[in-house]
Length: 431
Image (spheres, rainbow, N blue to C red):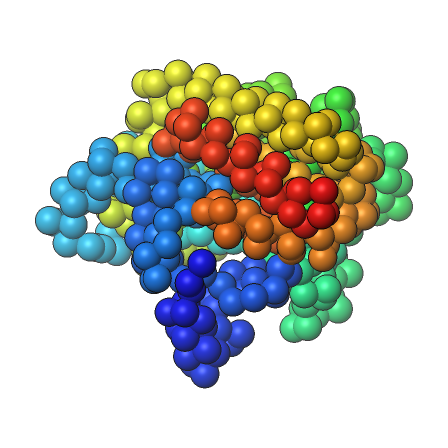
């Protein structure tokens, strides 16, 4: 496969952009080689600057649930830009978007738009602290909530790739206010709470982790966290930037029957445009300025282009429950195909999957938390990644990422992915 143009662009980029990329995982450091520079995408495919075609399993890290360049969303964006790009003033679409989100996610009574998932999580933490009058938060090892200072403590995803989960530039004071617990370990959470009585403002987690690979909550884990937070007056925040509107119309909280106090959203609610949101109980959200004293603002928050794209996306998902039926079927077909290939080849790697999210971990141990995810053979994953890329399958360039499926994937695409997976495993293991 010729990627000469991508290699040239990467060499040039390193002179002007730190590391040559605008988000660390894109640099391919975890898998080796030069990153592929994408030129366009349509449906289940992306095309690079050398005109190579790939079936795509990233989908912009989740939001392209209907596939790339969906005609409905394209039209919504086109119609919106006829009226200018941004106003820095209230618009009808912001109200319609807020009303729609509240109707789809029962735990959200009021919602505030922002521009990214990172902004959403940073703001939710600030509001929780303002609401409770407490300073400390609990997060989980391997969960990634963006690059806010409070979250770069035992972080996953890109930070893991570089082996520096505690980023320089994060002050000791911030680190002291961030308590970390192993994912799926209720006892550890209770121990932290007991040791920090009346000091913990919030507990935040990805209900299904996507940033140490796809890792599911153990039975009763989310419900146990809800109970602890209720008993201790702690604000429970579910980071559904990845899972919101993807695992179900009401997100992971609908799927697992859990009602958080605050929820953070992103990705899908912009239909691929830069956007985020946080919302929840009215009494907590009424602490946000100008209703209350907790300050948060943004000139581009709720911008009309993102709102138009997001409204089209969410209305479609709301009106077409068959989307989730299709995504479930695609996820099952893919994982069953992978399992059949591994059985055929005598392999016992771990596959975690829920709906349209999955990760193949190169370990024979169950992956339920960050340490077990790190037991994976990372060099082997790197070889697998390139073997799949050579066969026209574009995946996330890190073992510590979930893959995301879209409704644009038909049986013929899934069959090609399954075939490429088996061939790639045979190649890298010389079977």
